[in-house]
Length: 256
Length: 325
Image (tube, rainbow over all chains, first blue to last red):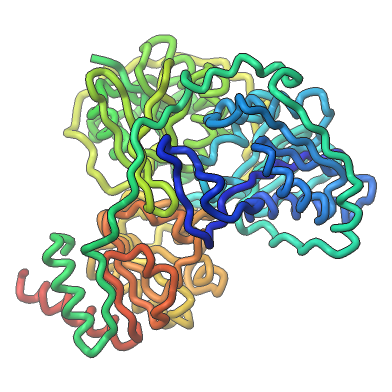
């Protein structure tokens, strides 16, 4: 089985995250890390490999040059190889363009399964995995709390406000996993050393036949503003009157 | 006036999802709503009547057995067909798993750009824009599409539906190719435990976390929710500890809510939890740890013992109710 795992490098949620004046992620403003949810996607793949050594895992990312750090981390955790889709023309790509680039990189690589996180911690759109499935013409199962691979098919369970659903699809398929998927393992020293020798394929827009990207046609940010400090935001320490102060607040805000 | 296509979702119980009214309200703000429903043949009459009560002036029903047997395939085919017939300016769906898959697939299939997780929408001189809350509410952004039809997912809220209408109804039979869709093998409707409002559409949500300490103590949160007429939410920790079923989980896994008031009790505010509630208009938290991350985003934070404060809050609310305030 060949598994592609979609990795995304994001600003660390524990850091002070910023947007540029144009409303894009300010990559220089904070520590860059592999998104935790995409590491869970990788862990889901690695558990297949733990059970069956013939499983091959490719970590795939679209991102700037710095995103190789996230791919190296994936390789040190146990992925066999990586694919870095990188081009100046991809800067500012919206969800659909990102999905097209990813699908282009995945096309022809004979994957049985593509595993993604259900939503990134920066963009939080949650649509890219389904878009990739549509562009590849394969089923999508997500967001899954658990996934099981049984030969030619994948099964899983997902949760909604009104209940749970059990799903099944034939492979190849795209799945996305939630934070209920197993937590990612830490890279071991040996993994970190061997990661340096593992192959990373680098593809630009021309090689992906994506040279005609026009980001201005897609989702464009028109305005971006930092929320003013919550002047109304109060924090009190209960001195016995907290409940009545809360009632007064809710009443003043017409919430009760 | 421009047509605005609305994706209608049907719950596991067979009823309209509670987010439908809010979607129709937003669509009314942008233009003329066209509610699009994929449903097995002969099952749509009651749903169409419900859509009329929620103010849908036009309902387009695509009859296909895949509506209940496969994920998203029926909805995407129905929406694509409605786009051909009604030439909309935008397509709106909720930010549920079904809504996101429908919008993602539809955008990829029709080559139109997305506007995601909108907390508000506007039509300014013919240009449709969306407001988003970014990085846990640190930034607010406005976005639009450069060209094409805006494919939008919307953060659900308790905003009411437009006034009831007597809808024009168009029904077609649709052949849907479901070979590239996941099959639903089993559906378990969550038990609807009470008269409490459903989470995605509740105006007030009261959520409890690990700080409650036990299932018995979680009743304090349930009582507070009932006194406020609120939906009942929970953090993952509370769900994992068995205090409350998973259908109440608010967060990256589970339900996203944007109520007028979110009241977090004994919840530390992990990033995964905040992802599901950060767009609430007002956030109040009670936690004994003054360094809990939830206090980074609260409008009103109380550092204190919830077992002292909740009973006081409860009796104060009951006193107000008794006094007819």
